[in-house]
Length: 336
Image (cartoon, rainbow, N blue to C red; front, side, top):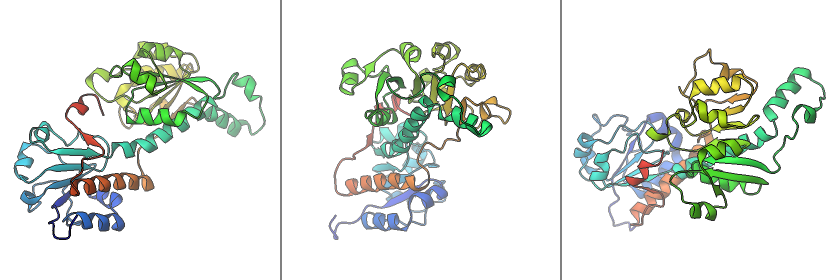
């Protein structure tokens, strides 16, 4: 950008703690070279924020207030929303699309640690690391692990991925070096596209019945609510592992609890419905369940990958280039 060209006015719109975590001093330095922004002003609520009329770029993240018609009326110069997080559904409204705003997301950057967590869960599940570790801690002696877990291990196992989302595709890439047979279920993907990805597209019920590990990567939509209900959970083969790093609402928690209580299947759950289970839930203590508190996504130092993605998008906008990771109204119909 030429030094004589006015820099576009920008504004942070997110929770202040997220601004502090995502934009340390080095990131702020880069940002202020690109846009005119007061890094100390963070809109957690647009009502008290001055000079909204001049804002051309909103840099959003978790905690951004909804960008409804009333808010947008106060920002006539707004042209772009750069989201330093994943889903934009919580704040990008129909009014944004009606006004032709450009929207970008760092969902691809956030997909990386989720996929890494998922692959680790898959590899550990087939190796029965959780159960063996618990038994070893309990007995503190060498046991016949092969006798206890016949056929355990990762060689030629069948992995079923539910949803060709950004995370689902990244998981697929990370699984390629391993000796797995991979199935994919996604009603929005055609067989030719699946073949180009190197996987076999199957119906969900077939995938559930055939897989040693099933990993969920579908969006939370009305049609995916309790996608895995009692019937579909019963299709899982004995000893299978269900991994959920997607959305808690994809699984009927009551039915899943009954299945894992029986000991028939295993589960690795980073998301649940409700988000925090009641303290009395058996899922906290079952030996065949690993429950983590929604940590698969970007945390700690991983946030800086999101920051870099967002800053790259701001730089593209300022230089007149298209976003690398645009979001459209149509995208939201089938995405998280």
